[in-house]
Amino acid sequence: MKKDDLKSLVTQMYEDLLENIDSQKDPNKEQLVTYLQNAVMTVQNINEDDISSVEHAKLAFSNAYKEIANKTLSSYKNTNNRFEKLTKIHEQTVQSYEHQLIDMPSIKEKFNEIQNHMSQEVQRANQVIAQLSAQVKELESSSNLDALTKIFNRRALDTYLKNLCDKKELKHELHVLLLDIDDFKKINDKYGHIAGDKILIFVANMLRKALRDGDKVFRYGGEEFLIVLNRIDVNTCQEIADRILKLVSSNQLFYKGEPINVTISIGSTLFYPEDTPEALINRADKALYKSKKSGKNQINMELKNGF
Image (cartoon, rainbow, N blue to C red; front, side):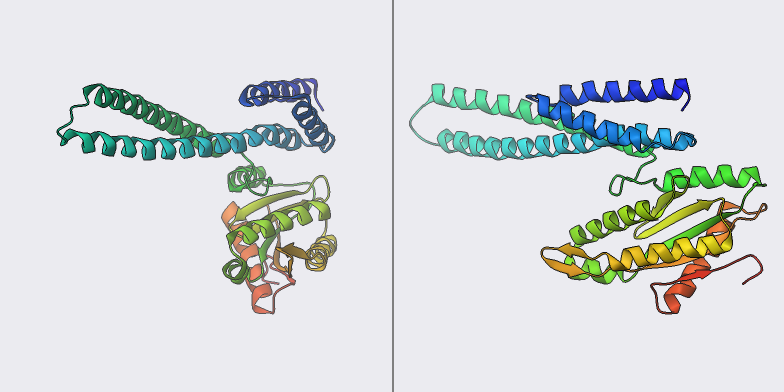
């Protein structure tokens, strides 16, 4: 790892650690230890020969604070809802006294003061919510990590494929795998979206286990993933795909005590010098369609000559 990369990573960790401490109401030693332990694991997983691995680590630190912002946002929304309910109660109380013969000016004045104060609090909370929402959207738009699975997202994939195709010639073969979770909609309908999210995380973790350091995995969209395998031939690509199929299908996922069997289908293709990102993905998608049509839980390959 270059000296500048190392300094940049340490700076990112330092800034995020301070932000983490500032965001906690009562920070303690255990929270600091947890952060540092997670930081050590992230740094240990860096592939020193791959600069994108360093960027991935930096984004991993920043990504954690999107979750903090979302939690803070949720807290403010709940507070806002409580204030609105109390404001309505006070309004009703004030209105009930306006038409009575008993004059209670001091009580009415006090109620009005409370109501004005609470209305100001609601307005302030709404402003904070708007600011946090804008910050979360900005973080999500600039991040290269998928918020759910913590792997590279579609934005990162588009950039990677554009740079790849701009190079035209590569010294080694490069293969692309397009993966789709079988019957994902049926699983979602039966178990709910929370189970669906757990399956996406489960598959992403299985892909990490099956891949080498130099390989890259992206969340392509929905229940689809895309893997870039570098410096391999067709036979090795087949072996890796078979290993992924077996790893996913042989590891059972449990949700609320009930086992869910998950399988995937894979479409594979080879990168050619004249490829565009669209052409590359289209061939992989054709191969994926063959796998789906042929019974799922398998791999098919689509090369430029139609094989």
